[in-house]
Length: 464
Length: 86
Image 1 (tube, rainbow over the protein chains, first blue to last red):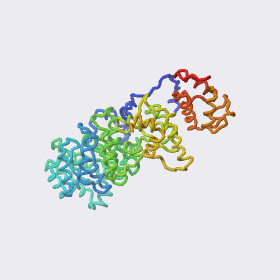
Image 2: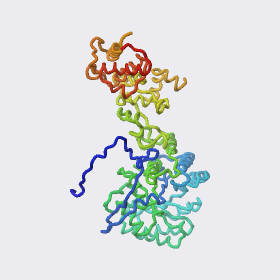
Image 3: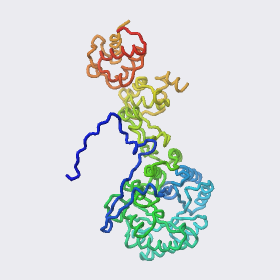
Image 4: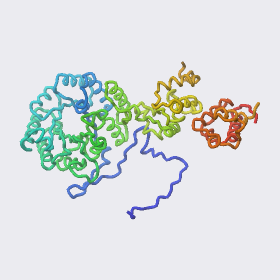
């Protein structure tokens, strides 16, 4: 430890160093990767070229209509079509949101698919999702789809206790029969390795993947088998040095380099049972999985899936630019989802009503001096959501002044000083100190009081 | 016309509910006269209304004493063309 020690003389300055190379503000903070990562795998150091993520064709795939819908009452067809349209806008014409998947079991499922395709968006591409049984496979053919996910559960928990196969071999052969049928019908199979982070990799998963690679040899590139690594119970970990089957870097290494599955045919699907879902998904990107499977606002089975909007901002941070993404459509999607009953928590990142709202007076004071002090990036520009102050007994006069200026839409030299807001500030404080109020003050109440206590400003800026 | 200091004492007494006769130029608004955070803002706002001036937030809130306020406000009045009795 002594060898690492070195002196750090002060670098004096009279002007602020705002580290704008990393914190440009008109984009989310950028993630600069300078060096490869090294894992010890089977006793040998293995390098992972993390900086290459900037040039690699990473993308997001969506499962809002499948895993997302398994966690809630069904969407109506109209709702799904609207959400699909929003997904297309969010991902942009470049297809950052590359694919989405649909159930194919009911008449409504089929009508939804048809109406989404009728919108004419190139992205996200529509794919199917079925169980790995031949009977379900005809649904893919009938829907005219070019790719479908097949549920190929791969842990012994599933093989023996859920699916009741007599042996691993019986299971493998059953899965491969459906895969063969897909290839024969010209449909690209996407094998979902359910529960892979709790599976016997050497005993079943890797032999199965080897077999899938063998079946793909000789097939046209667009039909070669894709693999989705499904961290079904959220057991995956990103930590260097973690052991298989939980280690995400090592899992990807095994499939990517030992089995030879190229990154563009690898996809990560996670769950949030241990609060790791977003970072796990980004880790998969970094270590060689090109696709990250996500749902809007993370809604999905139990604790949910990687949040798509989180993946979007991570994508921008890794790529260093917007790449055609429409981030403002995330706000539109959040408003729409709330309007149809999806309970997005108020403090949910990027999309919650209060994700960039402060109640603390000292934070409000900082916001007034320079918005960047307490705002993660230009949320007004990227999400249509300027930082807000929620007025409570802790917010102080700075908070009141910030609210007033935001309400009147005043910027720069036009902003009103806190002295001009003193009557409103007194009213706010008296709510708590004189009247014993315990709740925060709503925008509606503040508007009424502003009109009464600051009539000259109301007249000037609201013209009423 | 009352002097700047007299007018400041009158305003301070009203805002802080104090006896103007007890207020001295050397008194600190917070420590001696008990002004809390919002009251400091109310004081400055009241001074602005009393003298018909606009004050810079940082400069105004950095003034700590009654006498300091008198000097500062006199300068601001001169800059903004407001006649006062010093």
